[in-house]
Image 1: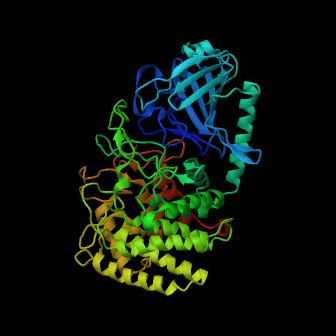
Image 2: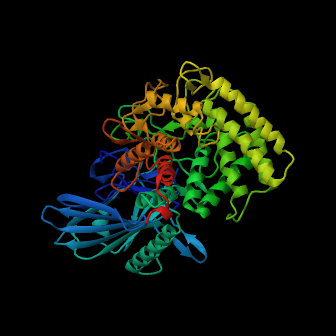
Length: 593
């Protein structure tokens, strides 16, 4: 297993999987992002490829990987010690078909010999029940069926079924195709289907990438981040998950292992902001529709901090004892206890995200009176809860405080409602403007730490956290306000570790955190740019780009001493942070030539 999350993402906005540097599918939850991991090898290394879908080149000496242009089609080249080479192309079909987007729960693997007489072994050994069982297997003339509770997969191939079923090594003397997907018979040839689907999938993503609004600088990094963000979009409902994985620890030897295969409304504002900058209006509108569903289903305007991709509210947390964990570091968690926590910033996050609906004239479904009324219920909650203790943005499990960021996001809910009401010509505009002004004044008074000369992370406290860097971008304080400059200086003193930023430095339920939170470093980059420290911001940004894995992807955390990636992967927050920072720092196109 890679020692630096050197994994590639494949997917089609219906499912997503991770492939390691040697071409093994080591993680895939099917049929959707939060389902049972049918390929759980990332979290449970067992002999003989159990829990993976591997294309093994015997006597492997080296491997290389890249994406095919601006697509998520992965190309892996394997080379043995004698110089024989094999190419593997992996992709999940996605293209327009009969006026709809065709995105089946399917992985297509195309193998072809490039040089010499490569001997390969195909190992296809899914598991189910979170690693506790193996599916029943049946065999046909050109297919294998894997029957698990609630899911049946069919592998259709023009390779020898015996070789695949028994993982028998053989000489790859011609191209072969492996189509793993729904339990349905193909109506065309295997090779023709694989070739056609590859061409159409490549065409879809190439055209999608062409429509992106990108900065002049760092174009490849932004395009790859945008594709990764898109692959975390569960298109059926519009949800965008925090990551595709569960329980990759935030640091070695810690029980900070969480299930991120869900949708946090807290992320909504930042994700919508990035999608808007990228010009991906369809994805943005789909996510806004999901946010609208949350607002409509919120009883009495009450929101919880995390939901399932299908709007599920109950995400009861348990563990999967049959899975040892990433590099043997457990526990592996299923579900997320945070759904029970009070986190008051969620109200501002949802209102901020939905505000786009009222001001973006490109959208087919702009916000109107009904959405405004739903958002008012959320803002009413924000106006009641802004000074009440909660678990805060970092979801502390052992204690509640009045967190400055939560209070500021409650202010943001009221502030944006005032702007929306003004836009609609609604008579409630003065009420929301006055409420926002009252909250802002009280927050500035109660969050200020005279001893530090900065705002504090909690009312009446003197410690800082990285969310305070967002106060300028949210419009709460101007970037040149002495109170923001003092806060920035305090954050730098307490949280900066070399070129990286911790989210906070105080001990929590699991001790003192040691890894840097990647998005916090991007927030820091944007804050530096906002106060005029442009060159320093660019240097830190370039360093973060260098920390991406070989495929241009980031996880949640990294080790400040080694740069090693930790935490769930690929992390939506991190990729969004990259996009937003690049957009802020890049020289404009009109000044580029």
